[in-house]
Length: 505
RNA sequence: GGGCGCGUAGCUCAAUGGUAGAGCAGCGGCCUUUUAAGCCGUUGGUUAAGGGUUCGAGCCCCUUCGCGCUCACCA
Image 1 (cartoon, rainbow, N blue to C red):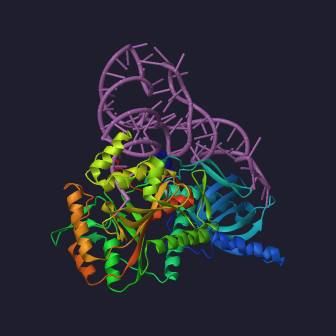
Image 2: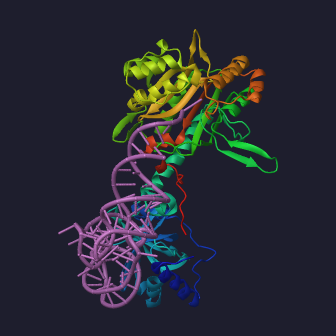
Image 3: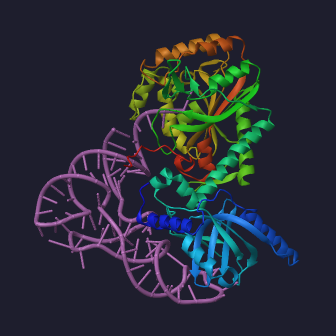
């Protein structure tokens, strides 16, 4: 480990401590309470007016210190909060005061015992009787100074460079309280979603991440290899085909929350791996799924934020049901003047688009053109929660036809904040039709199009045993977290977002 | 992948082509209820890396690396 000048000074302190018989990384701590518990106990005793003395041993990271000779103030912080330490030489003795000054640096984990008191300025503090190093920090935290003033966090300079923040998330979290808050909120969102689905009699399952045939979405997969089996495997791009196999097995309501992997471009809303929720609900259809979606998001908002109105990117988004509903065909007519029903082939549609002067990549698949249109003309305008419904059949090989309309399937996507949030449909459960759809994909997509949905014989076999009619649903959890924590890039809601590898010598 | 921008001390940031600086952190000193960041002093640099132009480059040019924004891509 190469040490900087600042780190060498701290390393010398370690040697100084060891030669004084003090272990800088002791095996055990004697902490009995969190900081929040100690403060709460004190406030309770104070309110009761009993004069009860609250003695405690707490631990935490040293975040600020102001040494003033015979008197010192410091702040320590643990996962529950932060408290001021108050040290006086006539309480501790000269030797201990000197030890505190000589051994401790900002960032060190320490434990300290004493009575909780209020100082003359009214701040709840621990009057320190004893202290001990728990873990010496060698590298200084990338925050110059950080303290509580009148209950408000004052930051004089802190880690702000996004690259360092993402590459060294541990330092970012250690120093930036609001970053910790984002990830606590994220955890609460996932828990609220689980609670909602559990309460609605869904059971949570886990399906393979390593798959011999990928599917369930249109995306390029990552490929890996099993050495002993001499078999190439794909990292899943969705859970769909496995979850629907489970409905064949009789699990009428299943869901999975987990990681998907897509070998595509990264952007403010795309990471190579991302967290997805999918559920499948037998005897339901896409209309019922829309309603459940509205209820679920509202329930998550209630539980996590206490409000259904959130501010994202300066705009208020209201998640109160019902969401706005827009028919895809009509939406496109209104937004760009193209009626997709008048252009049944990729050729006719693309010439209509060219006639409008639109710029796009020509493609053999009509569905991809429509997808381009909705991404360009509809998605950015859906700030308020919106269901866009009734999609073209050829980009939805797993969705069931709309009765009486062979070119359209019962599918919707949910949008909010100008982003796609979820995707759902009435699931196709006719094995012959499903086989035909797979074959269609093979014909209409170019052979080298990696997003072409591959044929999955085992999935067809499962379906041939009888698959209940059902509604299915998938949602990007990361994007929901962006919306509910007002973060404009997915990297801010991923603990360790993917960054390009860097030579660090 | 294309375009634009950025990269200076541990952190946050300055510096017309002309001596690389400030605040905080660090180090030293003063100080028994501080909190305006207590007061005073002081150390610290391969200016992302490499090359070029120039008497002289943090600054201009080229290459590379990384990050950001944006376009393309993206169910």
